[in-house]
Each structure stands twice: as C-alpha cells, then as structure tokens.
Length: 260
Image (tube, rainbow, N blue to C red; front, side, top):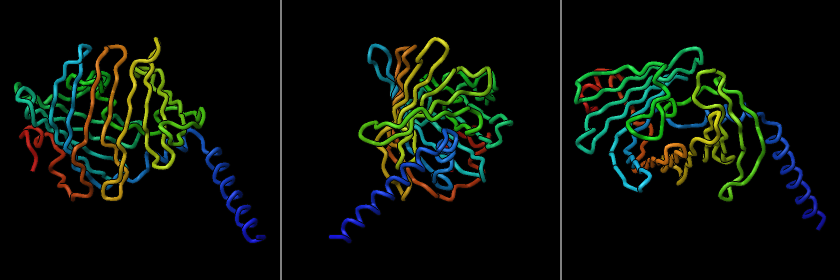
C-alpha cells in the first residue's frame, strides 16, 4: 500500500512539473516550437480548393503542391490541374527565415503566357479568388510578430495555448491574430484574423493525423466574415520526403505548367 501511495505522489509531482514548465513558456517560445516542428524535408500534396460564395454556390479546383526545405529557408510550388479556366496556373514561393528579407513569389497565368512577380504591395491581395492572401499562403518567422500567451483552454476537447500575435510591420493588413495551438502536436488549429474594425476572418484547421510519422492537417476552412465568402482546402494525398529535385522550384518550371 505504501508503494502505491508513493507511486501516486510521484505521478502527481511529475504532472505538476510538466504543468509548471508549460506555464513558464512565453508566447514566442510556443510559436518557435510550432515553427520548428517536424514537417519533413520535402512534400507532395494533392489538394482540392473549394470556393463558396454567400449564396452557397461552390467552385472546385484541383491542385498539386510541392515544397522543399533548404536549411531554414523553403521553396514551394503549386500547379492548378482543374478546371479548364485555371489549368496550368502556377504559383512559386521562396520563403526566407531571415525576417529582414522579403519572400520571393511568382504567379504564372497561362492565358497571358506571362509570369508576374508578386511584389510586397500585393502580399495582401487574395490568392486566385480564395480567402487566403499571398501572405497567408506562406509561413512567418516567429520574430516578425510580437507574441503573448493569453491563456490555456480546451478546444474540441484538446488542450491548447491561446496566443495573441501582433505584426511588427506597420503596413500589415492585420492588426492582430489570435491563434489556438494544440499542445500535443504543436500545431495551430484555429486562427482569428483582426483588422482595426474587428474580426475579419477565421481559419479552422482539422482532421489532423499522422502521415509518415508527421502530424498533418487534412482540412482547412477560411471563413471570411467581411466578404461573406469561404474557402475550403482538402488535402487528399500527402507524401513526405520524396527527394524532390531542385529544378522543380524555378520560374521556368511553373511556365511549363506541370512538374516532373
């Protein structure tokens, strides 16, 4: 009996230590954990983008996306497969960990047979009629924002950290974001985007499960309150560590309209 009591005391002590360590994490510490979590060396994703207007009418697009890490930097490319009006459209992004360096982005429109570089002034534009801006499509260095841990709470029965993130750049379209980070997988599961007038849109991330040992979200819903429009991203096929070639992540690659 005495051994059982001692065991319970030890378990309770460990639980308190873990709980204390979690409370000692700052908002920035938590966002660094999210940024540094394992997402493979590269990935190939087949996805479906569903655009839903305020009348409930849907437009469905099929996309193949590839990404690859280069140290702390990364490159990604998306090629639209269907429908015909967007087939062959390509989006290329080079993201840099150095927060003093602007990411490079290009969009290829096959109808114009021309590549358009996405300048800094266009980062707040919406991507291909969706509710994701060009800036939303990429990642952010944790030091581009000031992060504050607001509280801990359960969301869908999962313990989460709730973080307030305020962008340091003055021209950002968002005044702040409120982010729910699921503690066990170190992933965002909900994001609220605010401007000076209030809540603009809400991103819900769901169907999180392991693929090749890596925690992966299989559905995202961006609900644009301001525009009364929604975008759903379904990740139907995800594969990691595919040994992708470097020449896939070039302007000439998106001009071809398909990748090999």
